[in-house]
Length: 386
Ligand SMILES: *Cc1c(COP(=O)(O)O)cnc(C)c1O
Image (cartoon, rainbow, N blue to C red; front, side, top):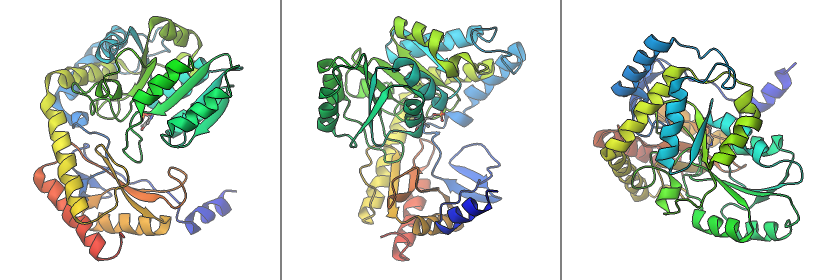
């Protein structure tokens, strides 16, 4: 039944395959049976394989077992869920926090709860798919503004002042380009037009800000972003999503957010690992320093090779190639040369904007980074990259 569609995807070089990883998400992994330098994991700080997280998860498992047994409003709220929410609220400087089972289910649960019939949503054109799906699930009128174009967002808001509620939603760091949203201007816009501002800090938590608290700390806008959403699955090396906001918003989500209400809660061991990750984040700023040092070393190397990295400002460094076929060829060649970074193609990115999306981790050594630069240099000389 799906053969034709599948062969169409193949023909357009958009067919996707799973690579099997047989080791922890360290700087080097075994993938499809080959040992390679890993440059596409979101495990920015190396916490996914950190001994403290392993320990915390094991001892929680010994005490609580594995599965949580029920949804949060039934019997699935352990003391570890409560503790983690308390810690997240404190970390983000908010009154309260709420856990979701993933970042994806946070966005698809928060947005339809906050914006519904008679409301409007103003959303950046490069927002993550989970935000787009959250918008699709909501009964609000959805308006997309040009990427980071606050003037465009304002012109939309001006025309929608009769909406019951207005929600502005943006990625804090854009997941495929690694650029940072204009949060200060969006805060002013939200204040001027009496809108709710929601920022998705999936790629900024643990990465941006002096204490790694994300974009709000990065811009010094504490208390002025209404809903901070994030995930525990990236820099925190664990799993699960969350929202932080004032207590009313969180109580409202507990009562109305469908992905929160109708899904079994995270295993307590996952909460324990997340708490351990927050402990490390708050006591070891060196990890974040190493991440940025590696990121800058890598970007300097690519720039000296005259390789196009778009508007990257963070450890997400896209190598923009353009056509899907060329990008796929480049990714396959990279893998043969011992570097693992995936080809990102439409619909994840726009037509003609296919890329190798690389990410840098704190656990990469200088030698790892230099090897990656050398490999990209070879690709460039061989004509795989413009
Ligand atoms: C990864 C990501 C998510 C989803 O988080 P998961 O925990 O992986 O489900 C949401 N938003 C953005 C911007 C992301 O990059």
